[in-house]
Image (cartoon, rainbow, N blue to C red; front, side):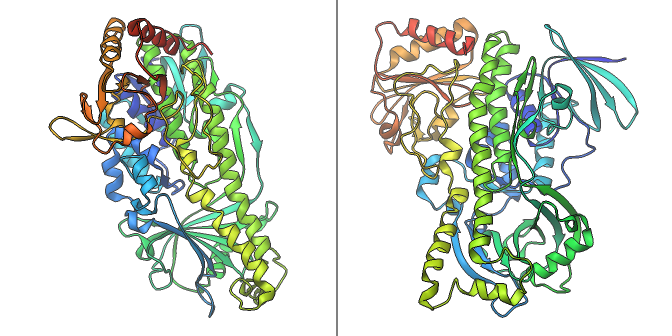
Amino acid sequence: METIEVPVLIVGGGGAGLTASMLLATMGVETLLVSSLPTTSILPKAHVLGQRAMEIMTDCGVADAIYKVGTPPAQMSHTAFYAGFAGHPEAGRVLRKLESWGAGGTDPDWVAASPVLTTNLPQIRLEPLLKARAEALSPGRVHFGHELIDLEQTEEGVLATIRDLAHDTTYQVVASYVIAADGGRTIGPMLGLEMVGMTDLTRSVTVHFSADLSELATDPDVLIRWIWCPETAKLAVLVPMGPTRWGPDSEEWVCHLSYDIDDDRAFDDEVAIADLRSSLGIGDHPIDAHLITRWTIGGVVVSSMREGRVFMVGDAAHRHPPTGGLGLTSAMHDVQNLCWKIAMATKGLAGDALLDSYELERRPVDQRNVDRSLENAMNYLVMSEEFGLADAAEAPEVRWEHLRRLWSDDQEHAELQRRALELMVSQSMEFHEHDVEYGYVHRSGAVVHDETSADPVTTSFRIYEPSTAPGRPLPHAWLETAQQERLSTLDLVPPGGFLLLAGEEGAPWVDAARQVAADRGIELTAVRVGHLAGDLFDPRLRLERIRDFGPGGAILVRPDRCTAWRSIGPSDDPASEVRSVFDQILGAAG
């Protein structure tokens, strides 16, 4: 039997696995990716890619390809709630429109937060781009149709048995580490891991279809349409899928329909299509259904994110409702957190304890994201009850009467209208959850915490307040070189390396960090930044306003752009202090 030796085996070829392959390649770590599936996803599935996710895609060198075919910003600037879609005199009435994900790049807070914009691209079209990039970075090391059939761990490494399904042959892989990105289908059960949380709250049926809805859909700036459908007492969620046109002119669509968990009708394709037509009020309007899938609303996190030399990422570690678009983006964040640690370990630059920090840091964040996704989803059930659409036994026209109360001039409905408005507006918790992307604090030995490392003051997940406190993500600020070339603070972090960012008087920190990094063989960028002096300039004083350290102070930023340490001012012995900081981070005592 052929044996392949590789530092890292990646099992799973979805968004998490392909991102891991790309990131590790940029860090100089050889990998082998295997996926039991014959191709990338055939399901539209996840589609919203937040700013932090697109920062990671920029690191991988695939962001431009995604933006090129993704939804134009102006056509995903809003979401909206509707009374019906078509087929009724009052169908299509807009109940409320909300700005979404930075309003297509017009919200100043989102523009200030990152050099990149949120975008939208269905997984069915995203994953081929990721696969092509992963193959370019690791030629001959990305294998679909290759199934993991056995996994053994020893103190020295992992022995995996893989079957090439096309040729019905098996081979073995000897690896130092395994990244389980298989959606929890194989490795989790092999290791006896469980998914913990709430499951099967409601059932959804998703229909992916082609149709010309350009004469029926309104609002070209709306990405997701939330449609209350009196004809069927269902909430229909309608999302354009491109591929070459977006908004009302989109060639393809996805429609999600909700069912009770014990409603067996959800498993009948003909019923699903009939319910889609009735819910949207499109009668016999031509549609071409590509795929019908079923899934349940729930939120779970795996019982352990590390088992020996195996690390769980993405859906193998946590599963969310799609509300909020946090599933795929959380997977990418997992991988960003993990890959630099594995790279350091495989190169002999860090101890095993650094790898324990992955679960310590990611579990609280992933749990928060799962909880947020569930809260987002549950609010729609509350709306259905409040709007009077939850009783499927009532006649459609009765349900229309309930819905008409939302725009009635009768004062007896004023209180209902107030509650309905508050419920719809509150869904900014899904479409303006900026602090969910950036507002975490990583807590482990891989961060040198101090009195400045308290959790953010704000309790609103809607408001992101940039900070250089240890454990927080490095804030974005536009800087300039002496030649007036513009770059972001985020651009200063080298792949798999550290950044020492000092104030304009922080030359001792810069010199000390460079010497310590050179002694250890660690890649590091060290620069001074100030408005009037430095290696780089802060022309807008953006960094000056948020850096929270003085001209002689500094921060050390990890390869995943998490601030790992901060000194407010200078030190009598900067070399010793920097050496101690690296000792803690790379040793990562829990």
